Image (cartoon, rainbow, N blue to C red; front, side, top):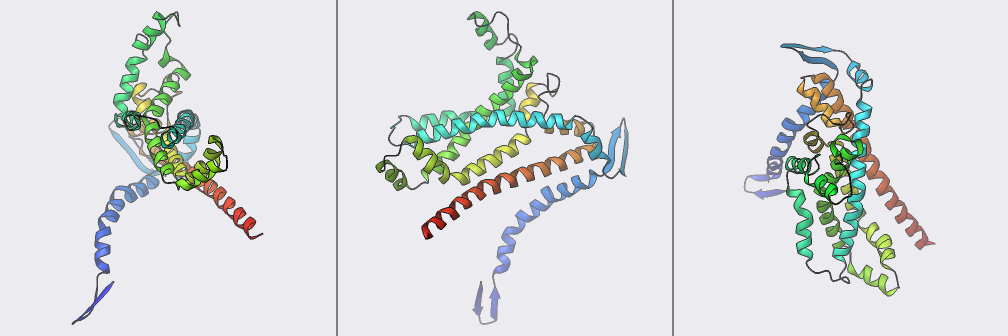
Length: 314
């Protein structure tokens, strides 16, 4: 925008650039430079051997080749399993709760109280949550004591020593920590739908399920895409809960070791070359999955829109 004065034209565009300069400076320093540095060092042999620093020596794709010859794919499978098993019940429960809390016909009392309660686990630090579960589900913890006293089990169940016992605890913690946040987001999306659509559907004799699947779900698709993408990114970067719960060992038999735990092991041993290779592959995987989810879900919506417009023209 320009303002004409006695001395000619004065441009105020520079102030816009000045206001956005701090963001781009922070992005360049704290994100772009580390990203480029990570990609650069992934092609180098760069690690510590005792007190000696080896490298950086260029090795090409040797780090990536060594990575796929290791247990990288196993840890990727662990990460995906932990995310899927925790996310599926999370999105189902969140959708059901969002539909219930926003349905005026149900007249649920104490909605605000329930909203606060379901969101509270999200405010607890993951480390504290993991320590709590470690104490509750240990061999001599309160849960095993109750199960044995009630006669449900004859001997304590070793949750942290079995594959699906430890995986189940990690998935349960992720579910409890995040389903409240997802519910709030979905409730906001449902409340943004025009109420006249629900009223028209009721007058047409639609059932609750028909309204939910034909109106609610299609209308909140953008928020569902956002929830799915952010959950996927968070799931692939899962670290704190399994790290603390298993003391960084991924027990039993490294079946709860995630990609970030594997990356952390290389960083702890100062193997920057391998750590960089893991980071680059994880970045590529996240980008591919997010782009795929975004275009697949939005592509379906655009396809339906074109069909409707075509039917209307016919």
